[in-house]
Image 1 (cartoon, rainbow, N blue to C red):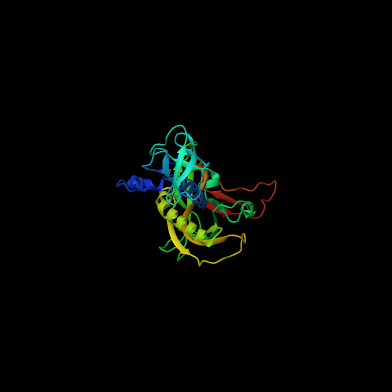
Image 2: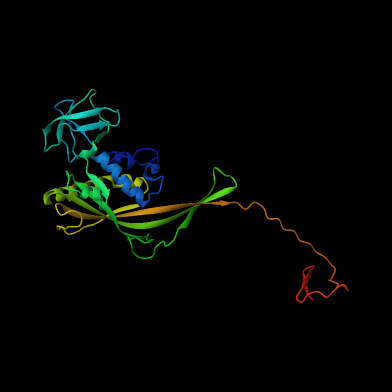
Length: 306
């Protein structure tokens, strides 16, 4: 099972995930909408850093999913801490480069490209990227639709979970005299992804690359708490001016089912003290005055009006 303190799995660890063990198929957490976008960003970093050895030399590798690399760029080996320099581009079509450094990379090491070489993944539409500076491919995201989660089979249809429900009640581990109510509510979310590039061909290539990425990492995000992920549609290709007029975009819609969790701490009821007194005397007015109207005296279960 995944652990919150550890990195997300990589998509090529799938055979391990589809183990026959039930524990490997069960998410150990719940994912919110914020978690979804964080997962996508983390997985994009992992995806673009994928590398493979070649038969040319131990310093020559392919970067099959990287979209931008040039001689002189830096690549970090996050497993060992080593930083490599791209010495030269051997085969641009096959994404093959020659590295230079102190210690050769080993299978299982994880690479991370420099920020300048990675596809931007940002909330729509950041002003900083609207400035006409050096452009790099960018994917923006926004929530196109969000509703209480359906309790039926199709997204957004039928009856919905319109308010949080109690999922579990546990004893507070820090305060024994308290218990914690865990409330949850499902949400149906439609996310819109715009893929931006400087040419129509570049935008087409970027959205195809992003679709492949989403498909490959779906199991990773579901294992980390996203209940359902569905490809909804790709909108009609068109040139639009809604961010910058010198770039083009392609739009993709994906459905994510998430859960919002709320924790409520409540004090336990430990004791009720009930004191009952039974008497046999009836109120006897004294000469000092007349009792006010409406006064009652309770005597052994009987109520007498005065």
